Length: 171
Image 1 (spheres, rainbow, N blue to C red):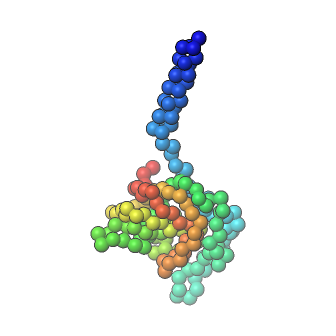
Image 2 (image 1 turned 60 degrees about the vertical axis):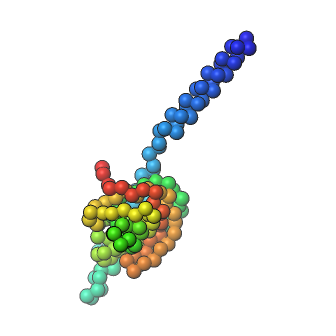
Image 3 (image 1 turned 90 degrees about the vertical axis):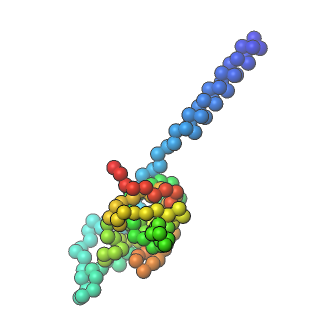
């Protein structure tokens, strides 16, 4: 009887040990974040009903002020995930490794005017740095999305991330 109980406990421990090993070996895919998840409902409604972009004289076209407020979606703060986008370099090394950048949803944003709304720009720091063949090559960034405003001559972001990885976009 004693050996029977001992045998069952040993099997149970072995089963738990195997389950733990399997769960450690299997890495869960990070949550994929969609750019529209970063916009509050009122901003999405503004986009859907937005009149044609105005051109003020010889200056750049301007988006309506109400969409440029930088409102955020509180539930997106501290979300671990990954998001695709295009890189607007802010800080590079002498050998052109990108250490800090704005991630934007479409190529040319922040370079061409008007820039996207602040809730469509993520300020990213990547301590390892990475190189790109061309700025029109999209990337995946992975890390924890944080609600944090960053202002720069190229644009203003409502979100930030310290990237754990930056990889070429493939789909």
